[in-house]
Length: 318
Image (tube, rainbow, N blue to C red; front, side):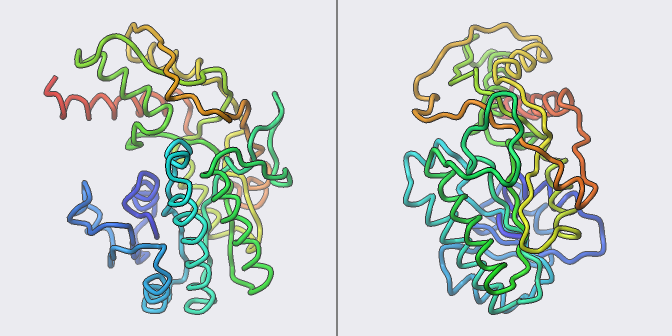
């Protein structure tokens, strides 16, 4: 599992039952990772791995010869990609290419779950559900890098018969997500207002955009199902099929926290080419694997806020 120390990687590792042997990789030594010791206990081995280093990637795959690979490592922020388009493409597209080639030559029988992003689709029509047949219209460097990753996965499956299963994963959140992302940023600010370490203001970007927000625990269950039952060469939306405006989600977070605050538009949080409506159709993954989202949105928001509140308490002592 690449990106094992990240938000989704930790949840995926926690979700798998006993009996399987997991090897993890991420960009830094475990000693430099928060919660590194807990991760070490769950893994048969761990290595600090730069996925942009083709030789290191190839050596790791040849040594382990895994039955399955879950590729989570990525620069995962659209906002950060605007500041560093070259670095984002290098990690997300070229890093994925190095892994595909390493699996082709070093573990040709392995199933490779290539975790992509629905950001590659761009915006869907208002009230519509985006299906896997929809064309890509990336609107930022992150989305473009994920579109390239998807195309590479399709090519390696068709040309080299690598057992690649691709995801187009829609927005998801839950406990442990960094406040670099919209809902986690809302929860973090609300928690700071509640603790009295921030004025009663919540800084926001575009609240009129409609997104769906799955729960990370549902998302990792989908990844497990696709590793076990996904069709090699195919792409699957990982999504709920239900859209919500960011304004509605912010209001729900404020209500469950019992916090009153002024909403302040922050130009630095508004993307110049934001998308208006990104909601997916989950029919294909349901038909293939039987997976469906199960965690209610209210629980997702509650757990997200409680996690943020606990972190702010630890940091501030309040």
